Amino acid sequence: MRASGKQAEQEEPYVMTVNSESVLLTVSEVADVLRTSQKAIYAMIERGQLPGLRRIGRRVLIRRADLLHWLDHNCASSRKG
Image 1 (cartoon, rainbow, N blue to C red):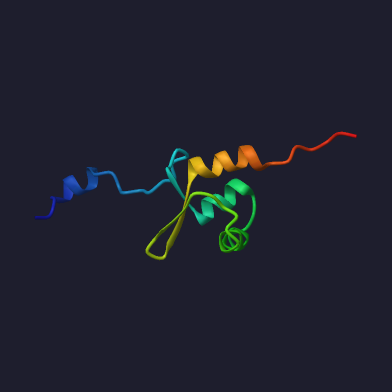
Image 2 (spheres, rainbow, N blue to C red):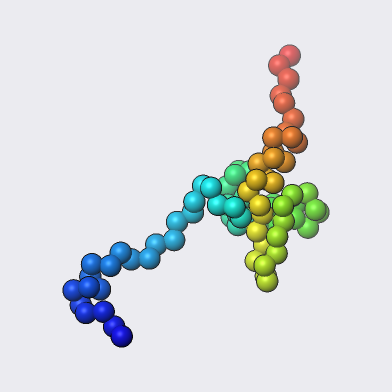
């Protein structure tokens, strides 16, 4: 059954937003976090360089916690000379 015109106007439109606390990140979101391109992320996936990889059908998702842990433990500190 359809809602009356008045009810339909009052309903909030469905808007999908990216939650910074999402458990799984898309390739686009991972590229934003690492400040690189989606193409570079796909290359890293092919080389097995990214942790927490999940494939759901054709979708490629990366666990946020695994990515952040990997970043914390695999980043090189810069030396000041």
